[in-house]
Image (tube, rainbow, N blue to C red; front, side):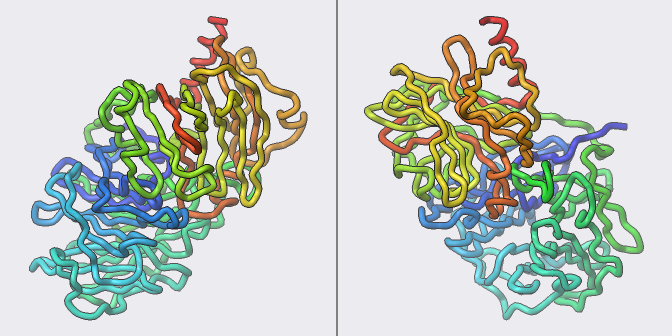
Length: 524
C-alpha cells in the first residue's frame, strides 16, 4: 500500500479540470490576471503532475488590458478530449468572455479562441452518444444549451438545469454521461469556508434533475479539518476502473480566522459509488494512493540561470506578454527587465514570477540595476498587497504595501554592482542564527505574537553569505482573508525604473534552504 500527500499540485492552482486519454491524465487550472493563461499539467498516476505548458500562451489568444483588476482574467476552465481532439472552454473576465480553444496535443499548439455565445462563467462541455455537444454554465443559476463546438454558436436558447441545494453562488458545473445517467456536479456556498460540492442526476437532458438526498456530498465547512474551502471538483475514471476527483482547497494557518497565502490548490480524493451516486472523499492531507504504477517526474529545477532562449513554463507575468520588456537576449545568461510603470502598485508594472508552492521557502536572486534603474525581488498577491526588497541609487530597501498604506521599512547603503536579494517565508522562527543578521530596530518586539500563517523576512546577502534582514513581516497581510481575491502568492523579479538585469533566480523549499544556510555558516 502506497500513500501520497495532498495537495497534488501545491500553490496557486484553483478550479482543476481533468480528463484521461489512455493511461495519461491531463489537467487545467485557472490563471486569472497572469499570463500565459491556463496552466496544463500531465500525470500518469493522478499523484505526480508536471507542468507541460499553457493553453493561452500567445497574445492572439490572451492579452488583458493593464486596467483589468486583479483576480479578473481567466476563470475556471474545463478540459475535455472528444473524437481525438482536446477542447478547453473557459471565461476571460474583463476580456473576451467565454471562449473555446482546441488542440491535437495537450502541450499545444492550441488554436486561436472561438467566442462562445453564452453568458455567465465556468462553462463546461459534454457530448451525447450521437455527438450532440452541451455547454453548461453558471449565470445566477446553472443553465445549459446545445452548442456547435466548432463555431461556438448555441443551437437554441439556454434552459435552467439544476442550481444546487439552495446555497449561494452555484458555479463550476460539470456534466457527465455515466451508465445511462446524466450527472451534474457543481459547487455552491461560495469559494470561501462555506464551499461545498453537490450532485444531481437525470436520465435525459435538459432534465429534470434529481438531487442527492444528502447534498452537499463533500464540504469541510464548520470543521477543524486542515483542508478548507473544498469545492470546484471534476471526476475522472482511472484505467483500473476506480473513480477519483480533483478539487480545490486551501490550507489555512495561524490564529482565527486562520489565513492562506498560497491560494487555492489542487487536491485529489477517492470517489465511491453508492446506489448509483458518486460520493467523493474522504479528502485527507495524506491518503492511500491510486493503485496505479507510480510515475514521478523529474523535479522542476529550483534555480534558473537564464541560459535558455525562452522562459520555462513556470514563469508568469501580469496581464500580457511583453517581449520588448522581458529580454533574455540583451545580456547572455541574464533576464533583463525594462520598467513599464514606476511602482508595483500600478497595474501596468513589469513583474515576472513563480508561484509559491512550499509553505516554508526561500527566494533569492542576483540583480544589477542598469542606467539609474530600480528593481528587485517581491512577493505579490495583488497591486495593493505585496512586500519587496529592491535596489536603486546605491541603496537597498525593504518596502511593504498593505491596502492603502505603503511604507519603506528600512534601507542600507550598498556598493555598486550586482547584489544578492533574498526573501524567506517560514512557518516558524527556527532558523540557523549564525548566518542571519537582524536589525533590532526593524525586528518584531520580544514576545509579540504573529497571528498570521507565517513570517516573511526581507533583506540582502553579503559576500560572506550572511543574510542581512531589513524587515520581518507578518504574512497575514498577503493572504486572501485580508486582501480578498482568487489568487495566491507569486514570488519574482521586477523593474520599476529603467532596467534591471537578473543573473539567476532561485526558489527553494525551507528544508533545502536551511541546508544552504548551514553551508554558508560553515564557510564563514
